[in-house]
Length: 470
Image 1 (spheres, rainbow, N blue to C red):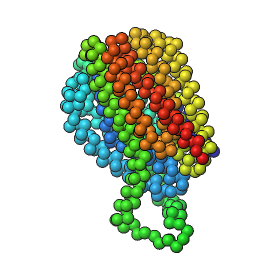
Image 2: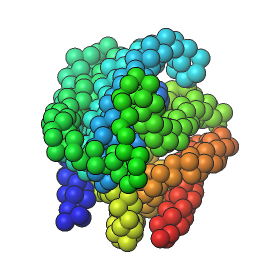
Image 3: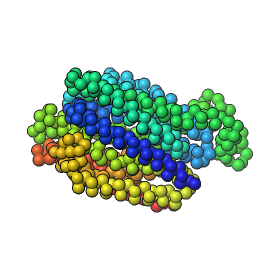
Image 4: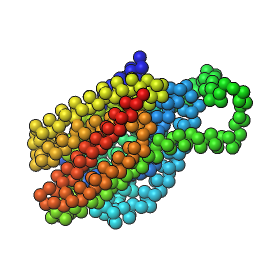
């Protein structure tokens, strides 16, 4: 019975992923053929800013909330869960407000001084439409996933795509004659509408409101008091502390520490990753210029690399991402309950499945490098990049499983250290290999492959080592 939530959640996310990937493939095909590589390149340039804003606005607290919720429910500590989710909601709301002001204020600097194309300023100004609902959605999805309820995440993914795609198509049709800037703006606005629908879906299906009513009931209070009494010990220290202001402040600080202990190392790793992506936005086109390409060619090549080739690696993730998502609360629950054998069994199945999907993806990319981009984008000339990206699949897919296990075990400091190392290696390789006229965009892709491989080896070794311990 304990394995049913894991299997049900994985299948639910897998079905949702199949729908969203199918819609996403059609969406990307139309975008490439209708908006063109240059508009796609401008959109891809501001996406790291979107991810950075979302990261700063959430501090990766939704992942911490997932772990704390799973741990609290496994121990029967409903008070811990209730306080953690309330504090997470307040912190994310405040951080989102501050981040919005910072992004709007820094838009001219980012567009004119940091990014290689000043046309991105308007797109950056539009980004709050997307990252505000994205950050708020994390509150509800983090809580739901901690309860191993994947309904909110699965339905939200489908709803986002089903609304986003027609909105973008309508805007592209309406602005078809207005130029590249308007076409790229249509992509950002569509992203914002999709994220807003995802937020509404998460609020409706996460179980946030019904759980609030349940936890206030007499049964929940008795269970929480029993946990609290157990923590005070069996001896004479049974006197209850009055919930005065000072006590409440320190109590909230304790919950905040438990959340931040998980989220901050992960946040720093994500922040470094997003900062590295922003550096890539500036670095890759500049190194392509150094290799002899023009500004327009560099923008198009960047759009091909990040908007056409890399998504080929992410499409098969619909079979791996759901397992990685449900594995974090499942392993956390098993570890908190002392069922380490069950955790090892779940881990082994997840790694085996992700490796099989990765090897199959690599075989398809190596066997049909011309047909895949020819059918999808009408651009068979990017076949050499398709071959290269296929080699990253086994490492990328198993790496996501290793990271989920380390999240569940609270080893976020180790994840951060490994991530810093691999990111530095990737940026150094991008700097030298992309400027090579014989490599160009392929050099950047080889550097990304090296990052995936090194990350999988380091995190995989750590995950195996920690799960071997009794």
